[in-house]
Length: 189
Image 1 (cartoon, rainbow, N blue to C red):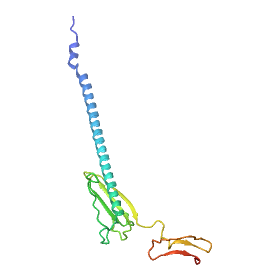
Image 2 (cartoon, rainbow, N blue to C red; image 1 turned 60 degrees about the vertical axis):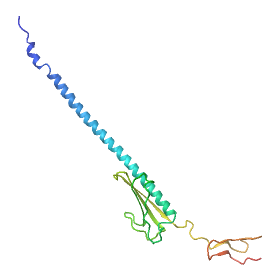
Image 3 (cartoon, one colour; image 1 turned 120 degrees about the vertical axis):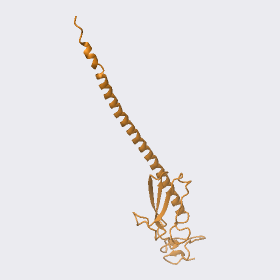
Image 4 (cartoon, one colour; image 1 turned 45 degrees about the vertical axis):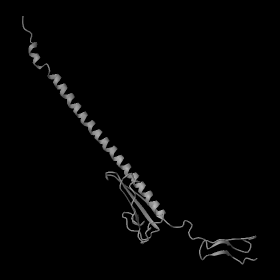
């Protein structure tokens, strides 16, 4: 009897298993690296979104404070003919840093001191807690009458038959130095 030649094949019995194991190990390493990278990117995006929301909330609070300051006495409350420097309490902004400036409305890219303290731009900036995100809010404000000038007389009537005034009449004019009744003709008794 001859001895079987199978003994020679047993020397290479595990090479296929080793190659498949190495290929699977390499694929798993690539997948783990990609997953870790995706997780890190997701974490960075979440942090950026959180910081942007912090800055947005701080800027909104600063703008509200700046508007309230302006509406409660104007931009020059210390009467030195220049716009005041406004400091927003950190208790209103969640502890985040903010700035509020009163600027000339014609200067768009920079904040120059306003020459007219009754028409200006309020710029509020809010920062995140680590100052990596910032947001700016801006609003134009003006202390101008929406109706133009007030009427010269509290009661105006034109022509002889335009207004018939009977009984007792009290007309109050809040315009100092202004006239009370203005007609096109004389008012008879």
